[in-house]
Amino acid sequence: MEHARPLPKYLAQRYAGWKATSYEDNKAWYRRLASEGQHPRAMIISCCDSRVHVTSIFGADQGEFFIHRNIANLVPAYEPDGNQHGTSAAVEYAVTALKVAHVIVMGHSSCGGVRGFYDMATGAAPELQEKSSFVGRWMDILKPGYDRIKDRHSGEDCVDHLEKEAVKVSLDNLMTFPFVKDAVEEGELSLHGIWHDIGQGDLSFYNGAKDAFEAV
Ligand SMILES: [Zn+2]
Image 1 (cartoon, rainbow, N blue to C red):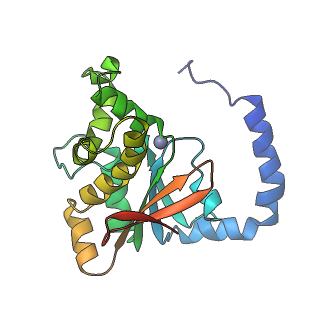
Image 2: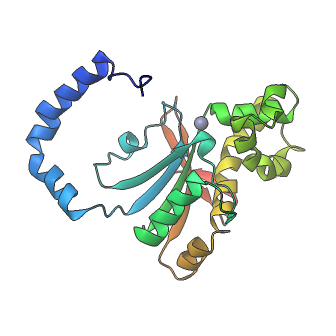
């Protein structure tokens, strides 16, 4: 496999710094994590966006969060068709094997995936409409959210609302997984939606009773 190259120097150097300091100072803790396995209390589903830093904003340590990231923090509907579903596999493992108590879907401001969906839906991004576009076909998951709001919102206002619809669609789709629905109904699992404003540092949560996002 000649296409696999050594790690870039800047990363190798940063790693060496971490090993000599953070790791060295907490070696016993890391060894315990390794020997006892993981027991995270929460699963977080967030966007791949490099500005979304869920461990930072919650001050989380190793072992605390089971994190899955994908374009626009979307969960597809339950579809046991024998194909390869990365997000569904992560949800299944978190809920049935790790038995997390919370699944938290986190959306964020200026999400490129959501912007792409809006452009595609309004005819401004024909390349995303191609069958071969992985991003386009993935973002199709957001369509029910768009259909809910498209008559009331347009332009930037619509894109802003769509970021929150992405969270709501994911929460809806989570409940289509029988093992998620069962765990929720038995009181063993709770689902949460949050949205993070990167520039302002604000965090809001989805209040299902009011169908609205409110400040945390
Ligand atoms: Zn995003």
